[in-house]
Amino acid sequence: MKEKIKKIFEKVRNWRFRYIAMVIVAIFLVWITFFDNFNLIDRFYKMSKLHELHETEKYYEKENLENSTRLEELMSGKEELEKFAREQYYMKEADEDIFLVITEE
Image 1 (cartoon, rainbow, N blue to C red):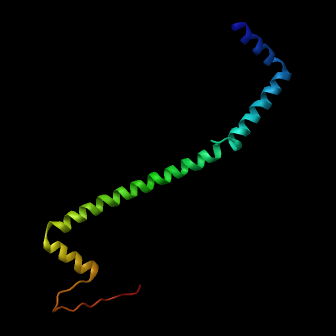
Image 2 (image 1 turned 90 degrees about the vertical axis):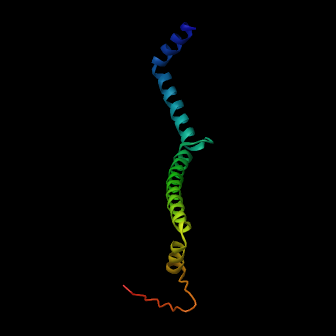
Image 3 (image 1 turned 90 degrees about the horizontal axis):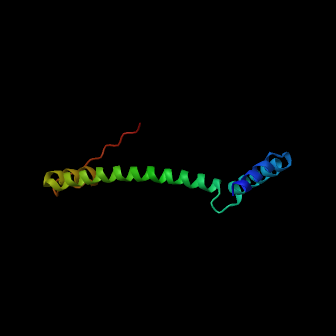
């Protein structure tokens, strides 16, 4: 087995076989970059998409945490729930009037 490997390396030392090996490597690199099912271009695109998805996952986890703490605050008492309803949905009691002041910047 070792003798076969030595013969192959002796042939590679020959210039003609070196050029053939370089052409084979170049064809292999072109094939891997463009034509293979798992080519490098698609792989880089999918890795960037995966990175974007991880970023959005972090964002939604943060939003989920903020909303859950806000929900706990709202459920803690009637006063907090009434304050939220008045500020966000402009709810009022029967004998009250609401005036909205809109300022333009």
